[in-house]
Image (tube, rainbow, N blue to C red; front, side, top):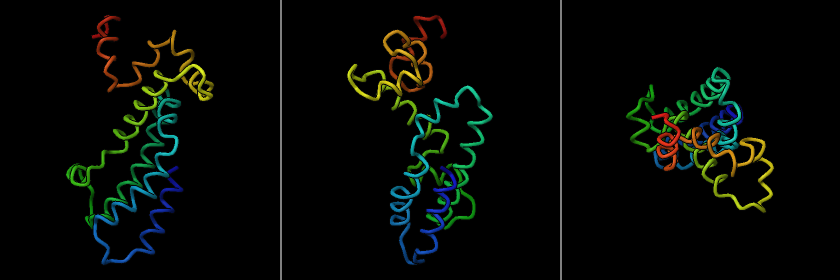
Length: 154
């Protein structure tokens, strides 16, 4: 993912015009570069969650691409938290976690006849019986606090 996104960013930089506004560069980043980085992000985040070293390595490579994009968009030397905030772009670690949360929420509400159930079952097992396996993976899910209270993990 990081390699393809990096190549796309370099293409945009090479074809880009120095007169392009930061807004246009941001739009190009969101449309072409970030979409390549995020393809399958929710699944990847869950799939390699137990192996935190592997996940850190993947996310670090993608974060490097995002940092290069922020430098290109705003023409700053070093991207900072202020840069992320100014452009309304969360860090890769936060963004991937959020996408994993959205995927989890989608899986919880998935219709029983949905063909994507196979993928859901591979990632989580049977959702109806295994909510305890899913909710802890989703830090923003509204039921998580209730789940923690009921299981005594507060």
